[in-house]
Image (tube, rainbow, N blue to C red; front, side):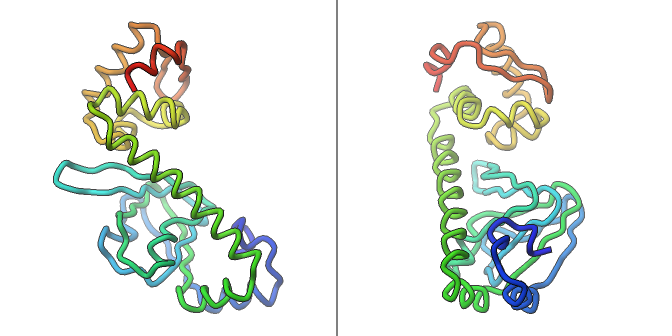
Length: 209
């Protein structure tokens, strides 16, 4: 299983065996919580199969930070720094997750420069994702949130249901529906739920960002 994960693809059989010795495999049902915001992290998480939503909660509500599809690694930043998880993770489908204990894995990182570089690359992707989330959170209103999401992550509107898009943006499905209807009437976007999404006038849409 480990060899299916991109950052482990270059490892030798003995190295893979070392990893397998410090790993455990867990199955999660749809809707099951993998970890909660504030939990302590002792394991690196590798999603082998399925889909996971990572989301933050506060007094204002819930905002999806990122959505992962296997195979991929997630929540590595908190585990690497040995700090509590800054967000919660929920299985969106039946998931298979491999967990690697932090300390032995860090020892392997110390011994393998290629693996360390791969982990750094993964962390950079997560940082970019967090920057997009912060950009959305700083939006002055719901319209700006949706426009920023459309311009930064157009695949969301092609692949997900309205209720899922609303969760990512941290707004109600009703508000999302009104905004999309408005933007379609202004001929700024072409949108059919889970089928088609296209920005027709990026310059005009940008003014709402």
